[in-house]
Image 1: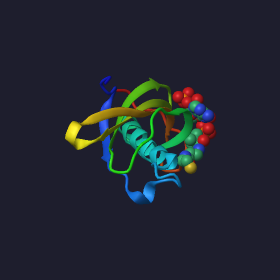
Image 2 (image 1 turned 180 degrees about the vertical axis):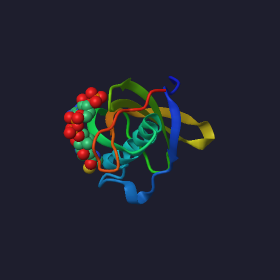
Image 3 (image 1 turned 120 degrees about the vertical axis):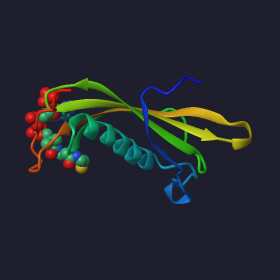
Length: 126
Ligand SMILES: CC(C)(COP(=O)(O)OP(=O)(O)OC[C@H]1O[C@@H](n2cnc3c(N)ncnc32)[C@H](O)[C@@H]1OP(=O)(O)O)[C@@H](O)C(=O)NCCC(=O)NCCS
């Protein structure tokens, strides 16, 4: 397995309520967790409130199954004046007797640092 890129942000176990009609985890559940993951990293980079402005890419490489332990990793990509791109990778661990880890999803999202009136604000320098 390739090692995850980025920092661990979330680790979640999806529940039966999160499945689609075929019994696998609903893509929308994964998208929500990915947005939360990217938002945590973006808020840290922007030192405050951010808003998701775009989902640049999103690839579901493997299905996520009920009972998987799903880990979300985030890495800061491009940083602009008020916006930043966050790359997220998702790995599922399953089969505890013979532990298997699979990369299930990768995504790139853009967040904008916003002020209390939800207007774009500059990202503070390091
Ligand atoms: C985020 C938001 C405040 C940006 O406002 P805006 O008037 O488009 O802002 P600007 O045109 O000044 O652009 C701000 C930054 O976002 C970037 N941006 C805007 N639209 C973008 C897009 N579709 N993709 C990537 N970046 C984008 C701009 O390039 C700019 O980046 P920079 O300052 O680093 O160069 C506004 O679009 C908004 O409130 N959107 C809804 C956010 C939201 O509610 N998200 C949750 C989902 S419901």
